[in-house]
Image (cartoon, rainbow, N blue to C red; front, side, top):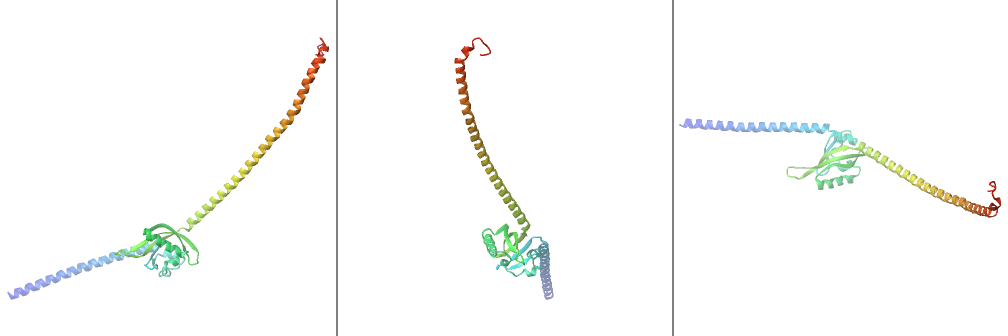
Length: 239
């Protein structure tokens, strides 16, 4: 009986140990698979960041750059991402106050889409960009920083400026032409008025002597009929 009890105890111990090892093995396997998936996700995420055409960035709570895509460094004229990391995001704005206005906007809306700002390149030149950015949070909901993308819209802004200048020039030409037409119309009205006055004067000057002539003609005819027609008698040549 004692031997059987010792045997049962050893079997029970061996079974328990085997179960524990199985649980540990399963846990380790699950952890390894989870880490493998995490590594794969990070690799995929990294691949996206490395190849994205727009400029990706991420800051910490203090506004310092902790992640950026190569395209972000290239956009601003830096040779590598390492030159960008650790710098304050404010330093990349042509007007640092714009960064604060962006943060104020994010405080209201949490996310902005196609929000236009001007960044500055390494040689001090402004670059027009639109950004879609937002806060990112930890598991407890606390803000960890800001992340988003910038898109270079300098070419679009140049086209918009060209169109605006063309529109302004066209409006100026239309205004000038309208002024010319107004002055021409005024001059035409003046000439038309002068023509009317001239015709009225000429008409009056012509009517005045004609009236006198017609009056004298009637007097002559009356006197002729009175004094000479009776003397003509039946002579048809004198009538």
